[in-house]
Length: 505
Image (cartoon, rainbow, N blue to C red):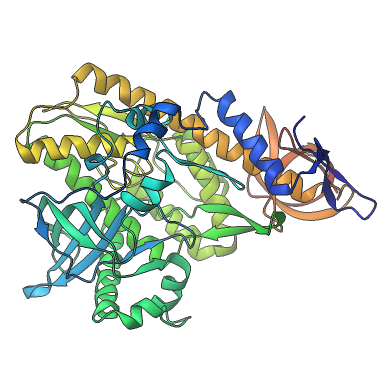
């Protein structure tokens, strides 16, 4: 029997004992996550053959003679506080005439995880790491993804470097790709790095200790801001994603918190977008196929137009990224407290991205939200299989070697990676809903302030302002539309299925 929490007289959730043991909140959610993985066709555990391969790996990849030695540069990683599967490092150099050189080092995962190996087969099945509140299911074993193939702090590692030069206004000048040995001199976290960049917090210790790092990060930040401004002028959408993070005290679920983008996440996003564009263009110039990450023109554009009309704004009848970005910019200025909810509505109406095979001389769709025509996924090979495929294509092109995949296989992999990514997203959302239901269990009858996040024939959905949990409004939903603020009463939770039901108060 799976662990299942029940409420005590005080309204707190307590896990039921299973087989003589007490199931914690973490164990409850981990069990739900494992079952959700299996139900979605994902493999939660590494098969014996992959574990056997892993046992023979004790050293990082050897450095080939042709690799450059760039360990002296002040490389740094910026990621989530608890991340150890580090895929990228960045560094900048100021050039004459206001130009800036940005280097992105990407972990050379292929150097250890060989195509056709058992580890590769497992990665190809799941195609992505799956992150749930209580347990993560890495695409590659942690002995690799958080150690031997991770760009870990103070460790010499082999990497694929995307070398880019930009004008002062953020326009691209030149780019190159090559293999190099690098060293991560500072493992930084988004929140503390962002606080330092914006002047609202002290410099993390590593920024102080590593000579030249503070100045280098300031230069990176300035160029990232220019890249952001340029992309938004071209129609990139300034959407505000609101990821919900679970907070545990030991193994007990304590809270849900919104994790919003900041200056440090923006810095990394801009450089990754630029690097992913360069890799796609590089493969095309070398007459190689590529897996593109595409987001087609929104099929539900008419709904976005209506959403704008409800706010007394006008959008053209045909999808137009520049016009939509102008609308979003005006709404952020007019009603910043409601912008997150508006962003969520637009994101849902745009639909999901997908992987598409682009053949030499082809014309694959671009990425509507990023306003980028040529775009691959290449910067997270420890976490995403499409990135590992792209890395193999890039290395083959650099070496003048034959194409490592058959065209038909790449076409199937594009479809498979899209399908499995969708499955992984559903697992993450499913367990996130169970975590929210677990936090609210035992609180039936309590009142909450909420905002309507979905209103359609299939149901009306609201998200509480605190905690940021989403559920279905089953009573009193008539006449509500997306963005409306309402007072709701909790009437039911189902942790196993992740259901939360509200009535309008």
